[in-house]
Length: 575
Image (cartoon, rainbow, N blue to C red):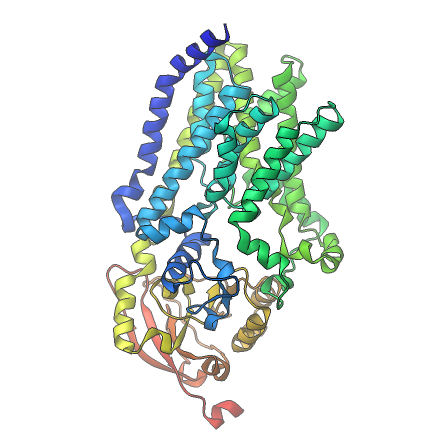
């Protein structure tokens, strides 16, 4: 009987899977067709990680020792350990392929395994009925289309695959495939950006089984230990940075818990309703109404049983995760964070990274409950699923960022334009340092320039303080920028109070800087010889800068104003 049910399920799933694969292929196609002319996410992507991979590979320090540094960034003070492990799959994609080929392959791998993982999880453990094929395949497709943070890889989208493996091990029905998942996933995901929180949840499930059900499943515990050990091995650089003492880093000055109670409560509901940029689910307009509808049906006692109980548990858990996320930033935590260093340097708010798994599993159960009710409820379920998939397709990077008038990859990195700048300066890149105003330092880094500025979350605290001297007067003009730099500081930028927290002034911008006040003596002493600005600096001469020339290129998003940092004279020093 069980085998017949399996065969029926596989038969019914065939065409839904074919259609899902076709949709996923179309969704990914702009990356392959457009290449560098594709539009992709800028925040925490083009402005950082993608440039880091290129810098790392070019540095010759891919396999560098734990105490090695990256010469191209912040005068060689950036630790090699800040740019990821050489055992990370995404690093190797960028080492072996051009940027957009690597990006397209990474997107494909992540979304394909997200689909496979959610499909297997639903088919084997939650949505088993043969007649519910559209639910398990459709929800798996929807989950695979969520706009995840690109460099997170399978950190969130790989959780269904891991849960599928763990649940089979928990049921003592595991094979080598389930153990292979636990061993291989760490090579294409992150411990601190996803799986620390997942594995701690698995640990709680193991404790629940032992304490409540009196089943101390050693194989399940061994699976948790094995996967954790694999992460420690793959991400040994992060582990070493935490264990081996050294000089203070930028993380030591993080001040994250500063929200009042009212603001914290608003943040909890905002996260619950709209999600977070690093684990977006786009659940607001379709999924959430369906979940409340099904909750009402359950509370009206029109649906009972295991699925109903699990649905309610996941519904509540999703809200609890949002509350936990928000209250991590509540100011009441700060006294404890100042005493316990780990609470400052590690972001425990990221338990919200579990929400994509929780929300889409909750969605699948809700749709299954509606389907079982038959009649027009079945139509409601299928229409809701179709609408969610359409919504996600409309959120495709190419559609979204083109609509938002973001630059393409080619326009963002402006390789031809910066090649002209290199030629104009005419010196070895390692012989001078540059910094940028009005555009991300990652652009100069991607093009091989040695930068004093950067966007990194782990670098020496002494460098943060040294660089601050350059921009001290600009920070004093803007309390927002001052707090942003002093209490976070991952963006070590040449901030201008007139520009604020904006770093993308494209070539048609009319913005100008009238009263820039940099400490060019410190800038010069640190090796700074040139500034790339995307807007004109009208008082450049008064600030120790000499305008050289303007650079433009039809394939670039920026017009670059090149300024030379003049050697400070005694008069400038006194002033």
